[in-house]
Amino acid sequence: MSTNQLVIIAAIGLFVCAVAPYAGWAVAFICGYVITLGGITTPLIVLGDVRSHVGIASSAPTIWLGDALLACALLAIWADRGRLKFGWHLAAFTLSACVLLVTVWGNTPEQWAGAKLYVTAIISFAVGRWLSENLTEIAATILACACLVVCGLQFLVTVAQSQGIMLLRGGSRDAAIWISDGRMIGLYTHPAYLGKTVFLLFCFLLPLSTCSRKLTEDWHMRPSLWVRLQHC
Image (cartoon, rainbow, N blue to C red; front, side):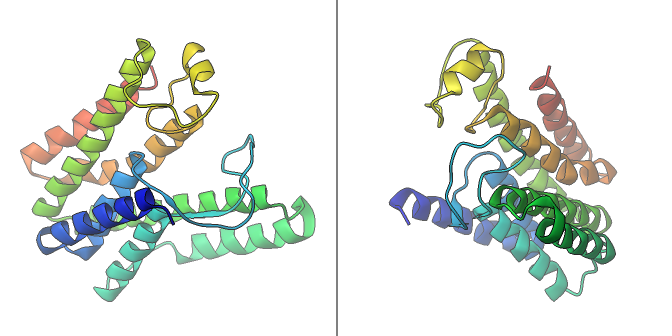
């Protein structure tokens, strides 16, 4: 593991530890996950060879830092005797997908990577539902701040790219071609990642609309507006 990877892991870990005393471990891990969705992430385990691939996921199943944080959030919720109402949905999808992958669809690394992405979406939805039922005022404010930072940074980088300004060097050889074609990549290596990230982020943004605190409601609407502008 490189020095940059260790620095990212340490930074996110410190952030989670700093937030936990105020918002609880579950929300702290979720806030860390939201930050990783903003492009500040790193792969932890890659099961196979990474190569050029067109699809909803990478060419090999990959465990990212965000996946570890999401798993930690689940453990924190269960440790606090919280209930996540998604067991049947996750079991039905995972079992049927595994059976079909092995027997019908070809059992390729690309397909397993895609199945893992769908499982992540189901878990994200469940965590978002738990947030809507258990979100405190302080936790909502902290989560809104994390979402605001992520969306604001992506919006700034995306607008700059649309004007021909690269605030950060693109992580892909084709980045310049995509941007010239009007497909912004934000802080990622492919335009599609930006859309998928916004989809997952909305799983955490939607519960904030039920918060009674005026400041949190306002901050919930700002990132929602920014993610819409990024797709205009």
